[in-house]
Length: 190
Image 1 (cartoon, rainbow, N blue to C red):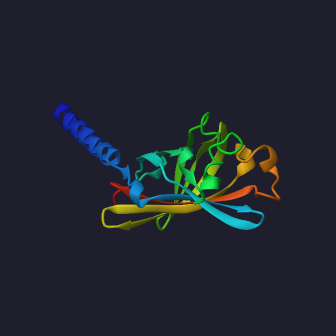
Image 2 (cartoon, helix red, strand yellow):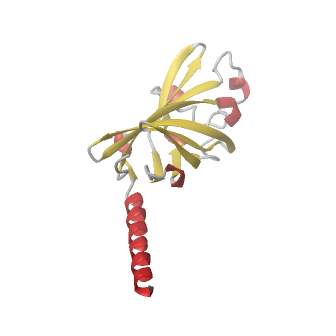
């Protein structure tokens, strides 16, 4: 009886270690990934993106509720593709990168919806403000690479982005659409 218990315990530890090691090898491939945002200035869509971001991912497709996802975005890397606009983004009225150099997302739950679709609940922190968020995510696989893609909307004023004279939503709309395509390695089959 004792021998059987020890063998069962050993196999359980090995199985868990293998699962943890597999999840520990999951990596974001930043060069093949993108986080973009679209806002409207005087009714005209303006698209930008972040050049620098990182993630710590522990995603188990078989047990998504056990998954943990954390993102950090270097907000000073935001670009709208025009030097005069890009020089304004780090200033206090916009991202205030001197005081708040990073935006963060920390998952609080992951729910499977079927057919490679998931809902990731979490907290988004930008410029010292934190908001709860539910992000729809679609996963696709191509060989060993998994792509997580989706989009969600935020209210920029809830995060104090575009303060003072820029708070007028007739000039810059409050709604900002965020789109992402994240390439990941080590996720495994789902």
